[in-house]
Length: 179
Image (cartoon, rainbow, N blue to C red; front, side):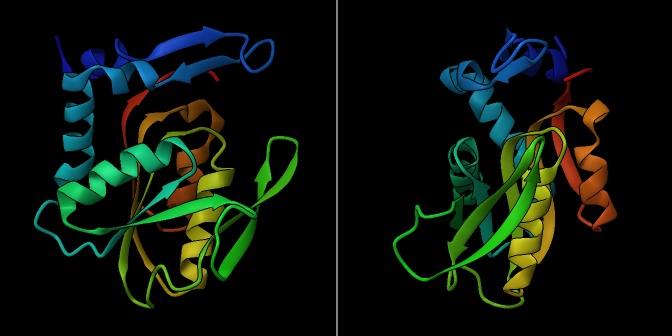
């Protein structure tokens, strides 16, 4: 079995969630499979093994799980990017586009120092609004965003292309057609 199929087979698809017509790609089944989880993290880390990466930033919530594992493998610090109002210290924030409307994300103002090399991690990229907001937030405080990594890309929705237009290399392990 190829890597792509091996990982794809551990992702559960839930039709009509959170609304009719959506195929929700659930990575909790991948996370529960020790072999698949390890392999996915190893593949996310591989291009940067031996490189100087200062921090890994993970987008709430599944990006925390993956980002923490990636940071550990790279001997880098971990930075949580959270929804507004969830962090206890002084924060910096960024609004970002959702499918219908906007939201706001935050990180601690001292989580990344200017010039630090950061990899952004989340489970999935769809339209790219959240990831684009996270890149802009990191850059706002002076981070160098080395890359953005995802388990799943939904290329029909254009999110990875949106990040590449910001000069952020994108690594995704698998892709699903549609939404």
